[in-house]
Amino acid sequence: MKRKIPNLNKENISKNYRKAFSTVDYFLECCQEKVDPRTKHLSKRSFLHRKIQKYGEYFDSEEYKDVVNESNCDVISKLDDLVDQLNKFREQKNLEVEELILIIKQINFIIGSEK
Image (cartoon, rainbow, N blue to C red; front, top):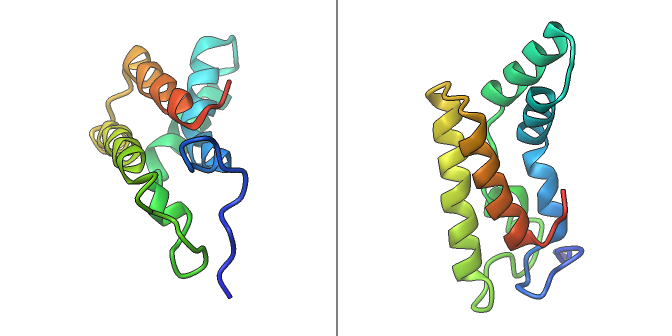
């Protein structure tokens, strides 16, 4: 039996999906705060080497029911486009912090997270 997707917002997107962006968050946090060079290096490496999953990958339709449906398909499409942008930055090793912040802010707005 498939499980329900937990913690849905008004757009039928799980707020738990925010966890998929933890490597980006940590990298940005290390860039904005005074941290030792090793910590910053490790956060950068973690971001560059871990692909960010799209919504349908994070919530596998084999395990969860109704992942993409009529009420959330447009929003998921927008999220997936933003994830593609982040992954493109990763692959190109483009670490423009301001651009990454703008993308993360858009994701937070869609998911409804105050991270």
